Image (cartoon, rainbow, N blue to C red; front, side, top):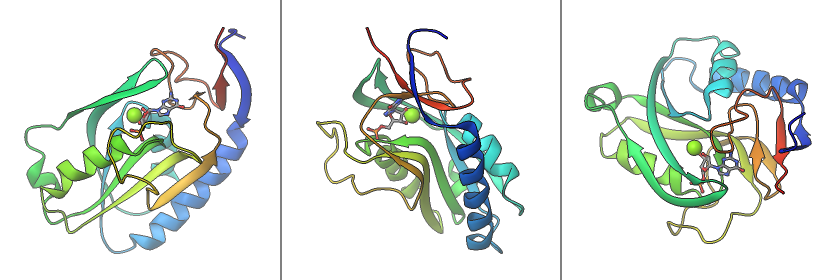
Length: 181
Ligand code: 5GP
Ligand code: MG
């Protein structure tokens, strides 16, 4: 195994079980609503793909790109929305999906941009939330965070199941701590 892959924090089996539960719960919540899932690229890809298949019921899918991390440190959030996004969101039931909630700056930036497009409602789901945010929070008032959380984790830099370190390790089927030299 590459030396950067540290302790396994959440196994593939535990992820699969939790994603099944979330899929069932969200299917009930959005039973007669045809939500628009807005996925934040790229970290949520494995989570999104598994969740969608654990969620029986009609839905639409859109993507936005947000980047904030530089190595293992949070920075300014850069957000790219498709130009024709307004008509895909206006008046719709929107569920924003991200991989991990740390300071909350990423989700806040995305939600502020989407809210301006006047959805019917806007809710948020993350696979992971850190119990304690990395200081400093770039945007004030962003905790306690999302409507649904897959797992609460300690404040360690995690990789795998979509989460990267310098672009690598997104394809690990489990979540692990990053081991740094
Ligand atoms: P926030 O904006 O809430 O501080 O951080 C959220 C974003 O930072 C996530 O979408 C993710 O891209 C990145 N991030 C935060 N913590 C981690 C981590 O432990 N590992 C990885 N790979 N990315 C992280
Ligand atoms: Mg991200």
